Length: 301
Image 1 (cartoon, rainbow, N blue to C red):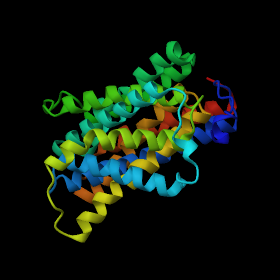
Image 2 (spheres, rainbow, N blue to C red; image 1 turned 180 degrees about the horizontal axis):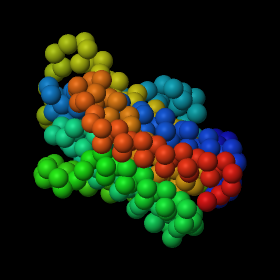
Image 3 (tube, one colour; image 1 turned 90 degrees about the vertical axis):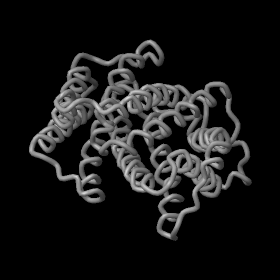
Image 4 (cartoon, rainbow, N blue to C red; image 1 turned 45 degrees about the vertical axis):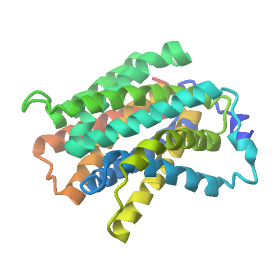
């Protein structure tokens, strides 16, 4: 077992360096996830979604094995709670599959509309599951952030696309994944959690991924396909470390910052020009995050 499982910092909700560092890591993780989603959306124009999912996890595992030199440290692959690790891995797989299916049909910003219900689920369940109860100010900041997301997405004004059901499934799996990640950081190493989740997902997806295989047509497509593993593994490693050092209710609202990354990538990659209401909603999201950051610097919420 590595040292990070032996010296878990206290992150019970008081101010201090650990929650601030956790917030910074979760913001970077959301950037990595957004790039992953944008890459998957781009690739889905020429490749089957389930093939993209499978290669994302295969390259994730290969990269993690090399990065952590598991052949020298086989103890990294041990776990004290194997069943929980397997359930967490399938939650990650479920999140990835349904989110990639959603971005195939929806704009990047649209896929976030339902996904952003996750902070409510995480914050509500973190109390009974983890003993990490959110205060009134943190709940208020979560609500304000969600209002910002509604300003961006304006649900109901143009009718909900049927593919939104994929985002509902992705959100549900994501919330459970986040809570199980926080639970497992008490006993298992960060590297082990990253590798084991990738192995389970890669093995589970192999039959389907191979059955729908379409050969990429050029080096650029191959490069992007293999890069999905780097974006996914990198993002989830940051996600794990963040949940090791900060409580789930502190981190949950910061997935809202992903709407900012989605808007930027949607514009840069797909030419989706943000409207005035989109920018206003993004500003509300950022403001709610800055408020939580301020409260964590001053004192626990």
